[in-house]
Length: 118
Image (cartoon, rainbow, N blue to C red; front, side):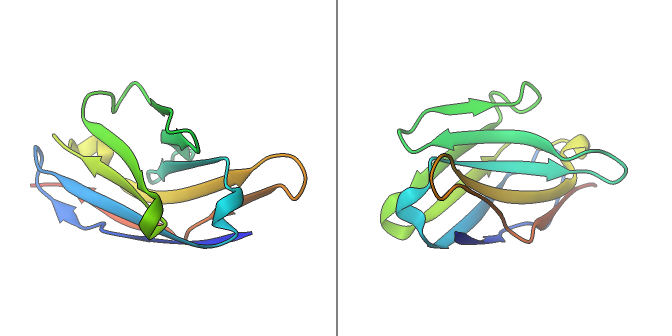
């Protein structure tokens, strides 16, 4: 298992930028992929971006060209750089880490609130 702690969420104006961080601890060497999800009020949790242990990334269509997911393996930290923020990006953002196969796990952080409003 791994433990995940998000940070960086805050109130930002439309068009602004934020960088979210997710610090991982525990069995980090066994992680196959990490991802950012978000959940807006009254909506289901949705995948925002994912990065594999090999560095392959993928994004939801709604954030392509605006968000960038990355990892700093030396610091055991994942990031989500969010640019050109829109009010519809307002949500609680969650960090996720998964391992498949033997000893599989699916770990979540506690979430960090991002609010985009003028």
